[in-house]
Image 1 (tube, protein in one colour):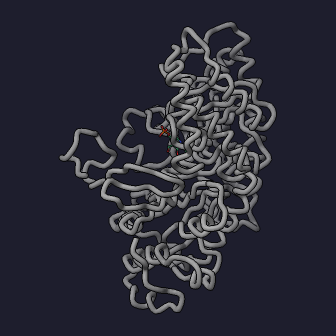
Image 2: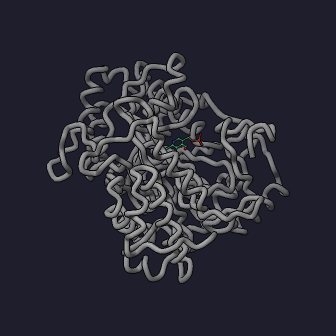
Image 3: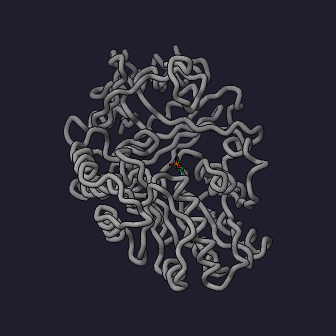
Length: 481
Ligand SMILES: Cc1ncc(COP(=O)(O)O)c(C=O)c1O
């Protein structure tokens, strides 16, 4: 549907969007009956897939019972239960949860909490935030200022507060010219240099996405990175705020992604998998020392929103988390992620335009380059990631494109974030069709060629060699959707 045919203000005013009408598992249907395989869980949102009836039923029960107890006057049972459940699932040391309704809103509150923590602990000079390039932390103005995706924030530049950024933890293009085997995480040390230069007496918090999702396609830092970040933050009395909006709630195999670096942030923001898209819900988990400082002054928290701790959305969160527990989903993410990663690497071998395959758990990213030997990025005018995604969508496969258009730091990525639905028998086959092939012989014998076709299409668009690729022995004719 084109912009002129309706009254909604859409993301892209020029785009002709299909009208989605139904979802089931990893499938979405539009009103014309076309079926799409969701290879990126929306935007890494629908972790448990579409159409889980018990979530909808719980929300309906709650909406009928009590739709809106105003948070300035009442507590409500579903919110309390959700917070308790979150603290049971999180690593030890967290003692309070604030519930909000979206990622940017939660990030803004995390910043306010960090500021109030220092004011209430007698260190009012500490107010500044330090962040990292190549991240995205939301679309509100402070989140924009903190974010490190230049093309997303540049239009707002005159309105943004100054936030120093450290170098990204971008192993494929290491700014220090190192490879992983020689790495001593100089990119983490950049935080210490920055903090000293900017004066730690003014710095309240370091903000980073533990695994960068959409903004840089599943960038996961080197194994030592967050232990170093933790040490630097402790040494300079700085809070570490982890944006786990995409990568939290088990999407990388542990409840917080940071657990895999053996280091825990002071404030953690969770969103997408938390309600798996069934309701707008976010959570900010606070370490006890943060909450304690805020509480000890007997001052109310300065902040708050109309939809804080909403019982209907909290009900959705509880049911989603219980569903994850019931099906033991976190435990299987690592194994599935391993297959995903191997499968994508296998595909990449045949496509020199895929320079890097990376990720953690069920968050995987592909970086496109002119040729993997040179790592030369495509110029932004070629819109490679967008064209790849459009080609995939036209064939019924949803993947998530990301690009940076700034000359000199262009990049083109797509994210592959399959839902973590309980997988058995034919489901595994379906999942494999979402771009996951463990090996070419398997792919040749058993799996639909639909996804391969997308890659051929994208490779041919990029380097015009469709005929050559079509001659690969493992290629077949793509079945109709
Ligand atoms: C890592 C990260 N942080 C923040 C946000 C902003 O969240 P929201 O769109 O709910 O405001 C997003 C959204 O995609 C995100 O992926």
